[in-house]
Image 1 (cartoon, rainbow, N blue to C red):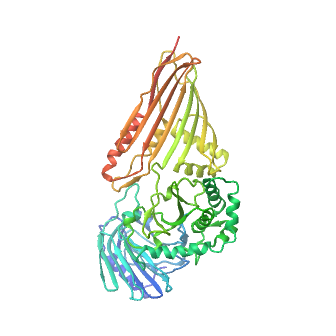
Image 2: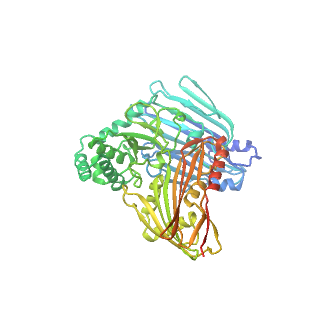
Image 3: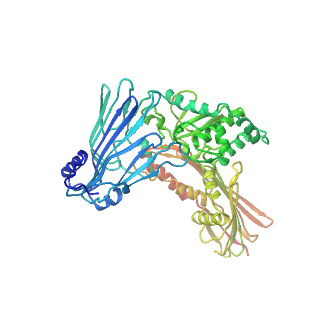
Length: 613
């Protein structure tokens, strides 16, 4: 509603009107005229007050950004919008009403927090105008509670003025740190201040881990990671204590298993696939899992509940497994400035079995022998052992598959093809997840579209699938295709066969970034072509063998030419592409992409021959 002329103007609105009048009207992009954060840590609560004034120079900035998002924990915190509204270019103020505010769920599947997003849409916002919001989040604290918060001064828009001030008491001390180059910070007694001006937006790129790249201001009541371990581990221990169900359930699940690996597989299959994921981070269970007997009875739970159940069952069969916290948005431990429970949003179970195994029971499609793609290389904190950050292990070759194509040429220049693709590592979980949710007709359609995009257009293959519903089975697909005649062998032929799955992997491996370092996840593709020719054909030129080695990876090709057997010649071509996982710096991008292009150029399978008369 428009504030009437006689109404008492809130000081924050008066300040915003003044800031708008002083703004440089030559600005042509969305700009934060001011952002101020005030934090007061008291004995029984933490109070955070945020004030932001935005300037919208164009109609597109109004269309794209004419709202505010505020994140908070409704199970713990209270959010009070002290004032929010728009300011016209003439200085008229229109306050946000209840219809302009809505709550939405902001958490993603798998995570254990219960964050809500309050979206405030500014009414009457115009180009050349401004918005202003001032809100307060109160986080109650008991004597044993911890508290932390993290701020990033650099945004994806200009910020003309940034200020942060935090104060605390000796009874409730606060640890502070900053690695932001955009602000200057200083501490005097129990007060910490940071300030910056004319902060440019973060430079964009194709793939960026913003949680690691953007400078931060961190505040926490904890000063070591042992405290984080103790806080979370006590809840896990309590959730497993005095269970009446775990022992009998473990025995039931493993009664037909012989080896330890078979027992692990049976237990993991149950927790990952028979206990469904339901967010359960209500009051009292933000970081504390429900008791395992409750999860067994309900057959649902969030990542904490599923992990503690998996932990208890594995320990029941003698596996020394431990819970591990995971920060799914962070990859660089050195960029985590201070210990805090809120650094983490996920938990998995890890143990040694020939190699370090980390099982994510919220992933119903990846077998226990593989680490789920989305947690590899993520910052982690084991809840047992040394109190220091690490990272979840990563595959040397995250994307791995084996493609085998048996091609039989017909005398009129057509061919039949039987192609079997076995998906491994991250591909296995990705493809199983996709197919599991589809009916048979939808699976055929999806597979046909994939075949057309990778192997050949205009074909009409028929597909069969194996391993969709069993984590212990190989995940593979098989296609059968008949191609109409497309050449004549009478006068000789020179054919180029695309090594389709090699080409596809290379095409998706190029780095699109230009500024920020990236982690290349690794690719390992084995492609086999067995080509059988009619008895009247002779091969005069076989494909070239390859032995391509580079610091970034290798591509090898072996070719065997079997002379007529039962009158038919056979060419067998096996190509192995191996590009190990590694971190690539911006200065390596051009060289890496040139390496990928060179492999692609050499990957074609070329051969020649003719029909004998």
